[in-house]
Image (cartoon, rainbow, N blue to C red; front, side):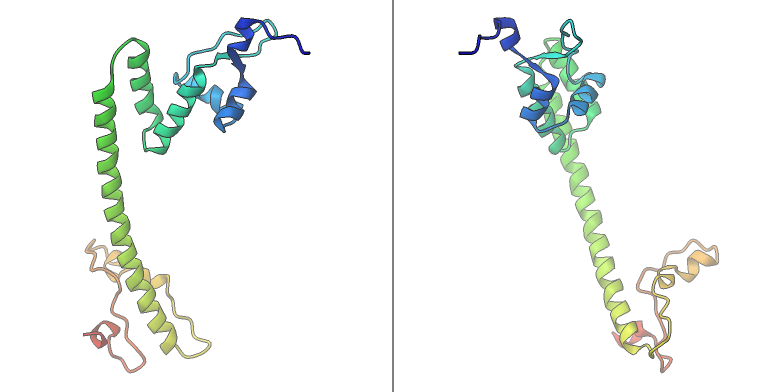
Length: 175
């Protein structure tokens, strides 16, 4: 039978064990420590960090909060307040609402990008279908608008009107 560990040692986890349990690297633990998300743990005489067992819950909380969109800076403030005995629940909710608004704006931006890219791909498909073999289509160059080159700063939108082989605008053919 193996001798049992002293009570103090059993209640702590070394960096590698804590990291393994939490699915992160020991470097990530040290990063959290440097950023003030984790209190500096006591060290053994040989220099090993010994984290209290409760640190596992804190690390998992940090990971889930980061996954939910909180930033390191967000967590620094919230956890500092909590460690001082404060109750930052309203602050946590306000941060989450802010991140939700940012996410909604990003989704809108991505939706506009998807629509633009859909139009570009459709235009390029048509241009390539009508292009004689061996001729360059200049697809990427077509993304640069004439207004961007002549200094007007006016953005007239994409897809640009391109003339087909018969001299008709591809934009006009779709109307």
